Length: 314
Image (cartoon, rainbow, N blue to C red; front, side, top):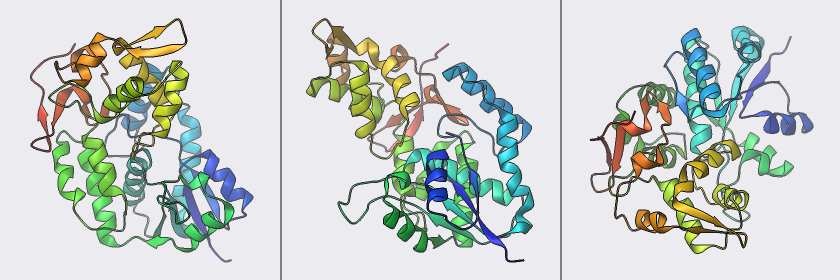
């Protein structure tokens, strides 16, 4: 009996596309957003699952059905059925954190199959960043044909980065920003991750500042309108509606919704963009990234590193 590939897709939308294209092999659909919330190094251990279930319940009022996750992941317990594993993950931080977790899980299960990566990003027709599900059939199949075999050193980078992400010192990720690997967009994603922490000057991170700049410079009619802009102009984050909507709610202290269907910055919003005060505590976005809270550190732009915060947030 000929063994077939196991494809690990970055979500149900891509899984449906691969099924439509009759891509040979079995598909494991990875449904997570590990770029937010607490994690531990042992992927999908009991401790891991409890942390994730509690996180989704507390932050997003979502009941994570762990039995469905376990059922899908059971495919990795039968690696003898497959010839190789092909990872389908995109250029952004959302996908890359999931990807290094997947690679770590494969290593933790001591699976020895060849690992390949299909990663979207800039496409030739317009050089814009595109997600895998946004590619047309020809582009998607070409990406598949051009898949990259991961080398032992690539796998070491992924598992080490995952271990650091689950740990307490994310500055240890900095050397991987300049390290060469088969992960074309890892450098951009790690930079983006460090810039998710509040900047020392104003207490805003890059995405928060960008959203306030959109409000300042664009005729925004509603929070829903703002959501569309923020999703389209978020660079390497790859956040979904759920995540960006939560950020916008946290930023609502900086703008006013006026009667003429217009959102405008208030005085506090202008002060934030001018860097006149550190607003991190007022934003109170107590998000957790892997092993640390967003409030544990601030990003010092001048030193290009994370430093411990000097205030306490209850």
